[in-house]
Length: 89
Image (cartoon, rainbow, N blue to C red; front, top):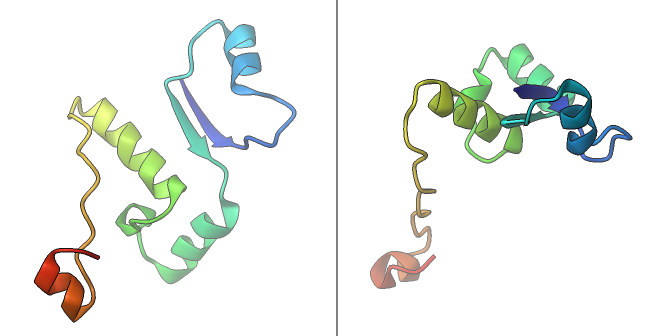
């Protein structure tokens, strides 16, 4: 089961949903209306964003549906000259 627009601060918890429906929740898609609306207004797919929980949740769901392995998080590229020389960020 997929729960969309899930809010950890809500009065209804994941356990409540699982108990009422009788099925274990496999994916939680967080509620981030502002970010979704911003992506819509900019005409930029949310999935192209790298650093937010909403896009990550959709990527995880897509990977699961496609039966792909979860990839390890990419190591950020060093941004400073010292970082590039030493391999540290």
